[in-house]
Image 1 (cartoon, rainbow, N blue to C red):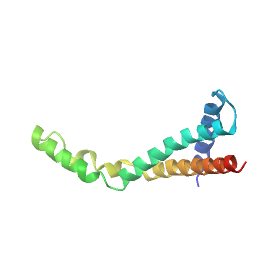
Image 2: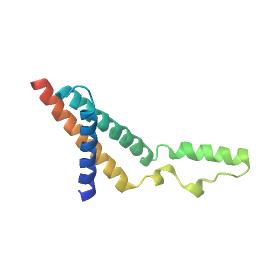
Image 3: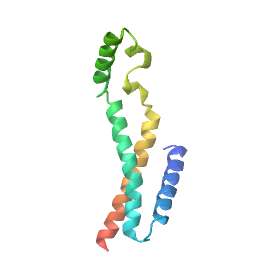
Image 4: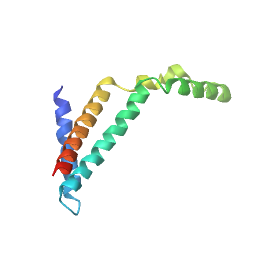
Length: 117
């Protein structure tokens, strides 16, 4: 793992800590909620990027562009902007996926502590 993965993780943990400290109650349940808010954001972004990178949307975008090109007289071309799967950078996806997995792991550990106590 690169150094940037860990720097982003520390930033995310600081964001989680800020969300936790700005809340009214300071207990384990509210810490779990704060971690969930940040982890859920990264989880949803990761899912969206995996779907885009997996070429699921390429056919739909190609069809809509082709229809738009016919309808508007050649304004859009699939070759101009490329397929949506080409827009997602692999290193960016790995950063986001790492953040989501680590934050979900921390969330699961906190949930295990909460339910075992």
